[in-house]
Length: 308
Image 1 (cartoon, rainbow, N blue to C red):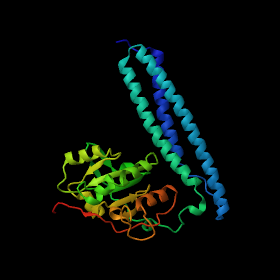
Image 2 (cartoon, rainbow, N blue to C red):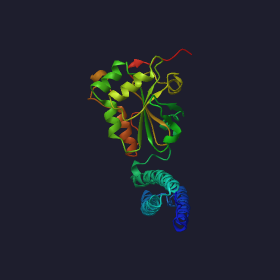
Image 3 (cartoon, helix red, strand yellow):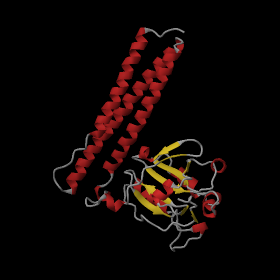
Image 4 (tube, rainbow, N blue to C red):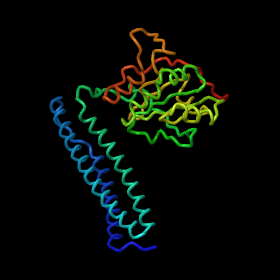
């Protein structure tokens, strides 16, 4: 195997250090609070908010430009390594590119969320007197494996909206939403790419790995089914039925707890037309608004928890 030439190897080291430095620089920028106006007037607050948004937009533009330049240079070095048959070096460059892409995506996501918050009209922002208590309880952290072998950690979803769907493939109410209405799958697809994470949780004592895998394959689920056959997480959240839905906001608070909609088995029961409560709650969060209906009675099949 040929060893890569000194100039290319040196440049690789320089670019690796540049990648780390850029990541730290952007993290520092994100940690700096936006400038606030000294006066209490709403007009002054809006002006300062606009200036902070402009600065943040400039940071985003610089981040994108610097990132693309770095990736282009790394790809050039990667091509040179392959040409010189320096396989090990090529692998190291590939790993560096992947790592830098992950860091970049996380930075962009956080900056865009902050930019969205700053651009939100002042009148739509939560009142100063609003406390965490008015937003619901803190969502209990948990870690579960899915039936297809992946691991889901709620702690890793900070900054995203999380929808928890308590699920049982044998429940007629669940079957309706998958066989006829396609409620869950279509709603998850609707918010895909908008920092909304959807997961199903199965706390049914008698369920099997094979049954859940077959169900996911049959309906081409775009989200995992988490294995909670112990009932630990279901009891932690107070899930009572399938489907019982929970919506967790970007700060980790449960802002909706209840039914998926007001139409069990497609039969609207409250008057005024069908309403999908989860769709409404997620849309309000994405618009920077407070969830208008935080609780409804869940309907469906009682969850079959194991005996304590």
